[in-house]
Figure 1 (tube, helix red, strand yellow):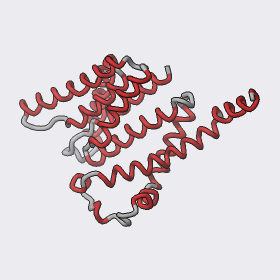
Figure 2: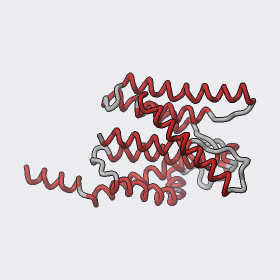
Figure 3: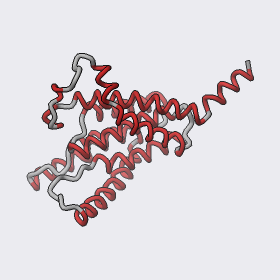
Figure 4: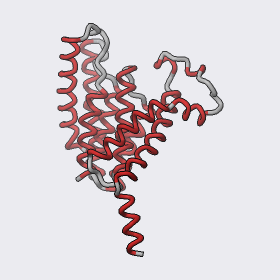
Length: 237
C-alpha cells in the first residue's frame, strides 16, 4: 500500500495535475461568473437581460456564454498554480479568493459597482474560514471586518455631508470589510495604505494621459490587489 500511496501523492503534487484542476476550476468559475452577470439588474448593466437566448435552459446558456470567462480564469488560475508555489490543499482556496476579487474588480471597472451578491458571500466565507481554521484569530477577523466597513462608511458620510456628493461607495466598504475578515484587523491599515497609494497613482496617470476625466475612479481594484497579496501571504505562511 505504501508504494501505491506514494504514487498517488506524486500524481496529486505534480504540476500537470494541478494545471488540469485549475482548468476545471476555471470552467466552473466561468459558469458562475456568467450566472452572476445575468442576475445583476439590467438597469445597472444597461443591457436587457430578458433578451438572453434560452432563458429556460440556464445550464446550457451558462456553458454557451462562458467561453471568454473560462479562457481568462484558466490563464489566471494556471499562473497562480505555477508562480505562487502554494500547496495543493490551499490552491482551491486561493483560486476562489482570486475569482471573487478579479470578478469584483472587472464589474467595478465597467459599471462602478461592487454588488452585494459577491461582496457579502466573500465576507462570510472569510469569517467562517477563520472561525474553522484559526489561520487568523476569529476575534481579529470580526474586528477586521468591522474596522474595514466603518472606516469607509465614515469617509462616505464625511464627504457626503461636507461636499454634498458621493466620494466613495458603500460597496467599497463591504469589500474592505470582506478583506478585513480574511486578513484580520492588523492588516486593514496596510491594505488601505497601499490601496490609497494605488488610487493616487491611477488618478495621476489618468489626469495626464486620459481625455475622459469626468467619470469616477473605481476604487475596488485598488483594494483588491493589495488585499489579494496579503491574503495569499497569510495562506502561504
